[in-house]
Amino acid sequence: MPGRLRAPTGRYGGKTAEERQAERRRRFLDAALQLFGDAPGFRSTTVAALSEAAGLSTRQFYEEFRTLEDVLAALHLQVNAWAESAVLEAAAAAAGLPLAERATAIFRAYAGNVTADPRRIRITFVEIIGVSARLEEQRLARRAGWVDLICAEARAAAERGEAARRDYRLAATGFIGSVNGLLHDWSAGWVEATLDEVVDELVRQLIGILRPPGWNP
Figure 1 (spheres, rainbow, N blue to C red):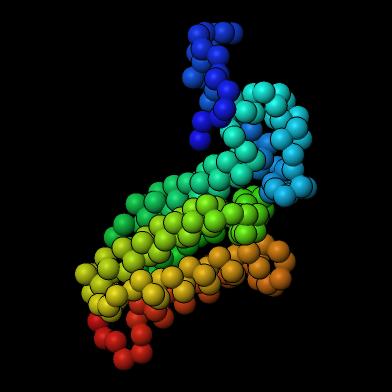
Figure 2: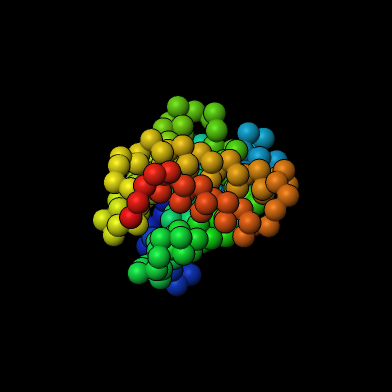
């Protein structure tokens, strides 16, 4: 979202105005990942503290963002984009594999990406919660995107004869809740298991959804 102040134009230091703006934005988001995703957290961070952590001025902050909520919104989308990119890459690499192996590859990619940095989990599952109606809408929209991905995989598996033919939206919505909850609890140290064991459990749950009792290929 554009800020309230107009950013400078023209070339400076060998970089265009657009390149300088992109670099400033990246530095603010990198600083936000540290402050929002670790200590002190989004609610205890000020514009001045974020600007200092980014090595920039508050004026430069307002050239890029209107509020700290705008920064959190952008960071939440970025973290989700990293995970989505990892999942799509894994799905492409696993094309043609049997259902269980394909699901394992996809969930291992997702789990590996979001748990590689505990700050990403906190942004996705903790800091974004309850901030505002706008961010709640964004959070649910991104969650709906993951539900759509699960449904697409389920339909493709059904077309291949590897899963039952049904409407998977309700089941996928519930399953995404299980994925998020289990990964958050594992990251917080509340689940005594390796990440591979967590992924294997998620795959078993998904296969149970796709192949209910009584279903035959």
